[in-house]
Image (cartoon, rainbow, N blue to C red; front, top):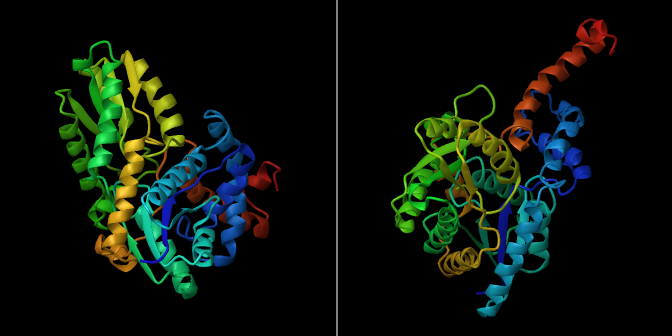
Length: 387
């Protein structure tokens, strides 16, 4: 085996408030996020949306310290993984490929080529597979390699999902147990799993295995936990008018309060790093809902971040994949689906990333309206003196 490379995949996020507008521009410049019939309108539309949404989005990131910690945490995970691989005798280098902010996947693939990587393990930092997260990143890599075949290493393999890994389950249960034991009545604490949601159509029409993998993951964690606490699963981050996986987290919290639950241990099951969905949506929005509903204890289980058991799990995944390559991108991106589908990257609530997607679609209609007004001289903008 030649020099080993590992490509960690994640979404990315604005690191400081000044990054928010260009981050949003990158997001909405992607035709997989907003598809419009006239390609020439893509970037002007992205500029319009990012400019109009920047102020509110910056306010949202301000609540969590002025930016997303995702890059910092992911880079720390990459360094720890690389050090462990080298300590075990591997000539290894770990790279990070983000979708909409630095370091971009395109740049990571160029560095992989420059460094002479002979074998590459592609490892998404999503424990469960979804066509909207891992699948989307895989499609991007396929596109890049198709356009520039020289960037593809001689050998590669893909890790599609890894929620069944013993180390992952162990790390999760240790964190959950710690939060349970902090409760005044540990035996009565309700373990509440909150996963990021996807539209029901992804499951029913596109064959996305995400829901079944989340449910299976929840079951495995509770079995590994070995405690008799009641537990439940809900889905956060619903946006837009379509039906999403239910129950919704905000509704489920109220229902638990009505059933007499007073102590809640909240588990962000879809995430391995702290970011806006944990720090703002769960810690601020859902905590407020719980307190208003009468839940007195709201203990949120931290994301795995630099948990040593979790890092070792990544090491084990890489070494096993490198020793026995079994999956390529074509098999992974197609075997999970019944039809061709290009969903959004990640679904979030409020002023977060996926909400921007839906806001963007509405803004697209507004953009078309503005164009009509410019050419006709009629419409509400002229009526109110804006144009």
